[in-house]
Image (cartoon, rainbow, N blue to C red; front, side):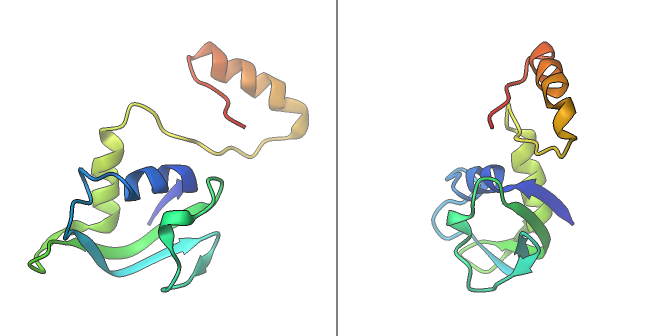
Length: 110
């Protein structure tokens, strides 16, 4: 199972290099905030949603399997310069976390 942020999932799902015309996924179980809705529009999930890719395959227009969906995401993620990470932390320690993120060259986006 692969867990990612909604914002990174939307970047992945809209990347035309990985999703050219005719490429699709099948037998997929993708949960949004713990809920699986096979009819959900995965292109409009909230940026702060917790997305879990539990199963599925990426297919060509000719119905040939390219890769498991989670593996396909991992391949995409390796090509990205940045990744969005959601962190749960005590409120009193937020400023410390922000300072650390800044120190290592990251950016706090929320």
